[in-house]
Image 1 (cartoon, rainbow, N blue to C red):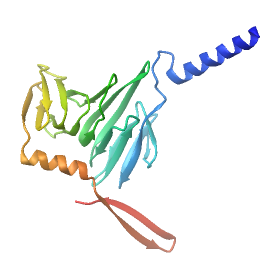
Image 2 (image 1 turned 180 degrees about the horizontal axis):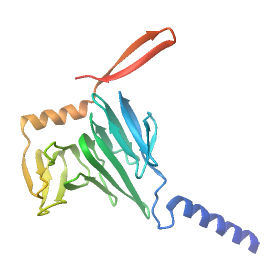
Image 3 (image 1 turned 30 degrees about the vertical axis):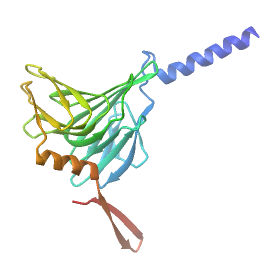
Image 4 (image 1 turned 60 degrees about the vertical axis):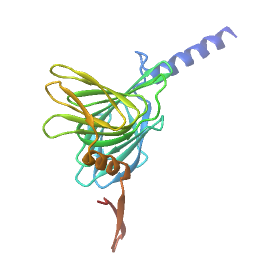
Length: 227
């Protein structure tokens, strides 16, 4: 009987180590899944780029890249949704902290729409080269602009903002407003403009069409964005 208890304890210990990692972080568990792909989307796993597939799971450290006229929808385990637009590059991070999951999506370039479910004790952040945004249950879109600034618009809820460079100013964006964070660390919050509201609607639609090409080797289906 004593031998059986020792064996059971070893099994539990090994299983816990494989699942949570030696530091208590869950580095290998899936945190999100790709639910839609249009045209050219690549994924980097273990420093190797390959064509992304619908249904493919994402783990901490995985990176996605969309091409021209392309898009990908990412759904997290808490049902939060990212609508990643064309010519965008983002990386997914997640750490398991006891029963909770700390999630961070880093947008290096491009634009994405988001719908983050209400976060209780968990942590959900967006980061860019110039900004850190803490999300509590919000809908809006995020863009890394060509001049190096980051722009985030909030449609519902509220978002805490902190510049990661320069003077590192902070701010809070509520529904109906947007914020621009410069590479000098300046934070400026304004009311949404007609152009911003148009981008919000565009990010939510994510419409696409399919084209069927008939060849002597069978039909080929091509998805593309609908403007």
